[in-house]
Every structure is written in structure tokens, then in C-alpha cells.
Length: 406
Ligand SMILES: Cc1ncc(COP(=O)(O)O)c(C=O)c1O
Image (tube, rainbow, N blue to C red; front, top):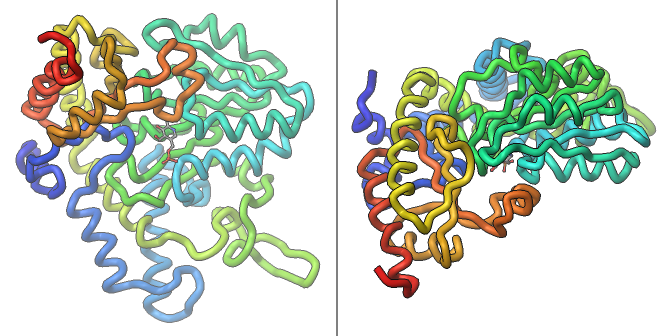
């Protein structure tokens, strides 16, 4: 088992120690192994995949398809053709909304989401609802961010065609009871779409066990490059869906007036694919599996506990989400009396501490909790106890900097 010092050597950007990076929920850092895998692809194998009949192109195709197999195994040993590479979670969810939602939701139907959704898992459904005259129904959490059984059993009815839920909230840090919600949604005849952007970096995911008909995630939040993500879709559903984007690579045969489409998964991957970053995603999966989710969870729980214990000593801080630090997935959202989160973040930036401030692309949740804006510190396994101490020390001085008495 690698030590935290050894692990940090893989992350040059943070290992220098100048910056404390606590914005991991927005995007993680990438280890050397991922950067080298991408670089090696371009140095040794680069050619347009899936097109050429020469060594480099066939090599690029092989690496790209190996990456797909790695993703399929990573989220619960699904079939590789059930994995569509996309740019990110946002594109994956838009694909489902447009290619499934627009054809399967009708006037009077309901689309159920939670009020905690990231805009990526809300706006596509708003578009479908508007276009198809369907109704959006919102599941609301309790004070700590938990969605109760009463809440989802009373709001998911026979009218629901789609239930779209985030696996882990990027603000509250809670893990939603997706498996239970999916079971109930299926009984009512709805399909279940899961936004896994914040779960795949932190926990083992098995999409079949979860009951997800679709599951979306981004590589960049789990050590991979930006610009590569994936969508899992149940084969029968994907087979019956129209393509989202059309053009090169996704066809079987084209005439002047019409076209037939390629087999899965290529039907949904129009244009030149992002093979280099897919290779990076495979390297990220290898890295995470080598470290293991037990280690990741243990580190995050330790750091989050320390963080929340420190925040609890500051009476002017309000923390959102579960009281139990172990239920935060490394995400701690808070406000400070009298200081706007943007000011907090700017003052901390002067001390080279990176946190997020704003609405976190979850404005309906901000409205629900009655905060226009919040600050968010999010840790990952490579952060250290010393970094948490440095953050707490500097945070405790922010009010003074803003003109309040010590
Ligand atoms: C819960 C959740 N869903 C979706 C997204 C969107 O991810 P991306 O910007 O990679 O598409 C994010 C990103 O912050 C997120 O936290």
C-alpha cells in the first residue's frame, strides 16, 4: 500500500505544497501516470481511430476500445457496447434527454428529479418537459439533505416516465438512496437516469445493482483528462433510441436522402472520437483501482472529520448537509456570517488556498436552503491533514480581514 507521501509525488501540481487544492468536486488533479498515458498515445499510436486500415489507426482503435472495456468493467461489468464515450456528464445527460426523453415522454407525463440536482441533470429535463408538455416533479430532502422513503413514494406515481437523480449531491455531499428509488420507480413503470458525476470518484459503482437504466459520469472528476466522460445505457434502450449527434463514423450506409446507422456504441459517437483522453480515463481507472476505494474512503472520512470538527469551533460558520462527516463524500459546504462566499474565497486565495464559492450549478437547491451562495471545500484522497489545518487556520482569520473584530 502506497503512503500518502508516495501518492503525492504522482501529483506534481499539489506536491510542491504551495497551494492547498480543495476544489476537487469541481475537478480533480491528474497523476503522472494519466498524463504519461495520454502523452504516450500521441507519441506512439496517434492516428484517427476506427477509420484507417494501417497500424497506427488500428492501434488507436484498439486502445480506444480497451478504454471502453475498462469503463464497462469499472461501473459493474456491463457490456462494452453499453458504454458511450461523451465529453462529460452534461453531454451524457443531454444525450438521454434528447434521444430517449423527447421520444418517450408525452403530454401529461411526469419527470421526477430532486431539488438537489446539478443544472446538468435539470435543464435537459426542463427542455423535454417544455417541449412535450410534461410536468417536472421535485423530490425534496430533509435538513441534512436526506430524501425519505415517504418523499419518493408519495411523489413517484404511475405518471412518471423518467426519474432522474444525482447519486451524490455536489453541494450537500449526501449519497441518495438511488437503489431504493430505482426499485420504486421501476414498479411505477419509469426509467431511471443517474447522474454519477460525484459518485464515481469516491465509491465502487455497480449500475445494475443500483438499478440505473442510464448512468452518466465525467472523467475529469476522477483523475482523468477534461473532455472525456461516459454514458452507460441499458442495451435494449440504446438500441431503440435515435442518434443524438449525426455525421461521420456513426453510420452504416448513406444515400442522398437517407442513412442507416452503425451498431452500438458507434451510433452515438459521431465524428472523430477523443481516443487520447479515453486512454487517459483508462489510466485513471487503473490508478484508482490500484489505490482502492477502501483507502479513498478512509482518507476522505479522516479529512472531512477534521475539517468539520474545525468548522464547528467557529460559531459564525454554518455547515450544510449531514451532521455525520462520514456521509459527506469529501464535500463540505458552508457559509460565514457577514462574509460573502466570494470574499471568503478571494481572501483564502491570497493564502493560496483554493475553494469554490457560488451557487455550484445548483440554484434550485440554493433557493431551497435559503442561501444565495455558499462556499465549498472538497477534499480527495491525496489531500493531507496539514492542508486541512492550514485551511482552518486561514479561514479563522477571514472575518478579521473583512473588518470584524478578532
Ligand atoms: C453532480 C454533478 N452533476 C453534473 C456535473 C457536470 O459535470 P460536467 O461539467 O463534467 O459535465 C457536475 C459537475 O460539477 C456535478 O457535480
